[in-house]
Image 1 (cartoon, rainbow, N blue to C red):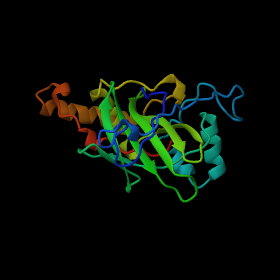
Image 2 (image 1 turned 30 degrees about the horizontal axis):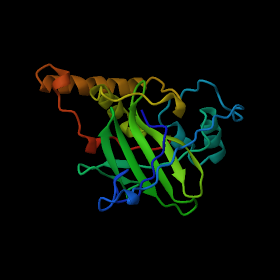
Image 3 (image 1 turned 180 degrees about the horizontal axis):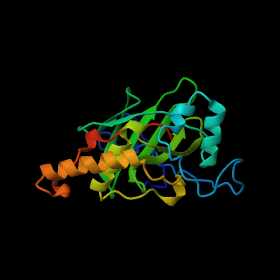
Length: 229
């Protein structure tokens, strides 16, 4: 699961690596302090589960008050759209132009990147690919250069949700998210998506001689992109 501590990371550097072998050049280590509010935000629904319609937030996107209400219902202050592409050289394309890095370690797959915004301070992200009740997603922490920090999770876009659910069955080494991240529960996938997954796995199982587990699993570079959260 994602670590509780935040490690500073700069583009082009490995986390915790030293330049020219000099330990003095190692980026400083800082701990992310998570403060749990004793008074829940207005509209929060304890034990909230995400909406059962995968397109729900997309359809609400231009109704900002409605989006805000839905975010607060599941315990988050806002939402973003982004995308992550994991490349074979262990680099990452985030939002199509921001570069980062990924690594497989400690039973999870970690992704880090930095991003500049026109309306907010530059932000560093550290997330992990984790297994939910029904599909894969990423979650972790972010730190803004103005000192603010928080938690984040990103679902796959609706058109890749079935792929994320199918892939979750293959990557059995992935762990669930840490409880501290308070990610809302996942509803059962719509019947059409469940049928799509069953048909795909049956086809792959037949192609591998009747053994679904022997079917070729997608590599890390083909993991579904993230969106909304």
